[in-house]
Amino acid sequence: MMQTGPHKVVIVGGGAGGLELAAKLGKKFGPQHVFLVDRAGDHIWKPSLHEVAAGTLDIHREGLSYFMLAKDKGFTFIFGEVAHVDRDGRLVQLKPVFSDQDIEIFPARNLHYDTLVLAVGSKSNFFGTPGAAEHAIALDSTQEAERFRLRLLHQLVTANQKKTEHADYVLKIGIVGGGATGVELAAELREACADAVFYGLNSLDPQRDIQITLLEGADRILSALPEKMSVAAQQLLIDRGIQVKTSVRVARVEPDALYDANGARYPIDLCVWAAGIEAPIFLKQLRLQTNRINQLVVDRGLRTEDPAVFALGDCAQVPWDNTTQFLPARAQIAHQQASFLLPEMARRIQGQQSENRNFRFRDYGSLVSVGHSRGVGSLMGVLSGKSWFVEGLLARMMYMSLHLMHHFAILGFARTAALALGRILMKRGAPRVKLH
Ligand SMILES: Cc1cc2nc3c(=O)[nH]c(=O)nc-3n(C[C@H](O)[C@H](O)[C@H](O)COP(=O)(O)OP(=O)(O)OC[C@H]3O[C@@H](n4cnc5c(N)ncnc54)[C@H](O)[C@@H]3O)c2cc1C
Image (cartoon, rainbow, N blue to C red):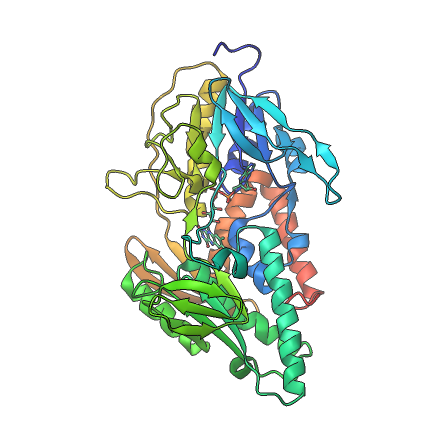
């Protein structure tokens, strides 16, 4: 299609990767060239969602307004959910936006692009397991994480009441999926429940009366990481009183129990599903190659078969350098891919030829937080194939570094520092876990 007016780069999805790209590109070229579309009005750092679910992070203090970021960084923000892309007409089609009273705020709209970058992330994959979507909560959004937190609080108060009445009662929390999200959530919940008890649920003994069970289908947790790390993480979880069950494939979810493929029953009061991911289904309808989990198949330059369409982050299947494997869904990768696409998008805006470069992932290690209390952390990592384990404030700071790097990219140094200081000060006046 002939280009008229300024070249428009439209980025759909303002998450770990898309927002960084929009901010860097917007700063260079301005709002007439750079457009970011997101279905949410606020940006949150998705890897924090397990802390939101546990109540150790207050989401109402975390979100960054896209409208504010757009003004600061020089891109145009379009609020709305993309339903489809008309590649022949080069149009992104947005659904109408309604208020909570069902009043239409924005009608259905079309947005023209010259270059499109799809960065729509992923959501939990229930793998068609009966009852999972109805009875388990997946930590895909702030709303879901907040829904879990409120249910947990409700269940804790109920459990405390039952114990006051001398009933023999144990609150049972099931986590399906022993990847990094499940492991981190289990550790975070153990500490958050103890904190909630500390603030007044006096009839509960957090270790005895709150049972947390992590169920994993593979024969070890953290199966994408070296075995040494799985063994150490499992031991740490067990030391914290968490039950870890491996080689258990959950085949059915009911309101009060999980059932495995052999029919064994695991009673639950609350269930979190963290057993794998899939990209948004609308990607399947774009007449571009996708894989079985709806990710767009791209080459090492993050290009789809359509020269005007790129994809990055969790929604893209990207070859892992010269191996036959594909890159995993990680914030570190989305962050690096945003930096990689920046010069390519700049060339397009300036009407220059592509350099046809390939993305190369630099693995700075995997960090899995296995709990913290009073600012002290325990962290397991793998760097250059070697596993290691760190504890203390250093661990906490290393874990936060990816989040901080993300903030630097979208806010700059001074505002990141001010925000970090503000949050530390706010924490001093707030309980360790959100109680309302
Ligand atoms: C609980 C949890 C803990 C995690 N911990 C870690 C960790 O410790 N380390 C790590 O590396 N990774 C972690 N991850 C994975 C990490 O969050 C993702 O890999 C990363 O966020 C992917 O970035 P992205 O830019 O591809 O997508 P996302 O960050 O998910 O952003 C996608 C954006 O697209 C928007 N969007 C989606 N669909 C549409 C649509 N149709 N129209 C408009 N907008 C849309 C969404 O609102 C969102 O803003 C964790 C994930 C979870 C859930």
